[in-house]
Image (tube, rainbow, N blue to C red):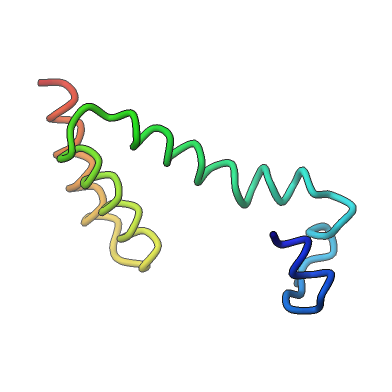
Length: 82
């Protein structure tokens, strides 16, 4: 998608190394982590765990303090280890 948007001029890449010469880098850094976590969350046995991971990701993305995410991670691990 990024390659298509770049070709039509709707998206510009700021870094020299993030371009059409290295599409694997775009996939590796930009998309693979999302799909890995999405698959992991999808396969979780309980909705409570799924919500905890999504909340944690939301707090990280929003730039909230790490302690909020750490609290969610502790709750999540408590559920995993119990």
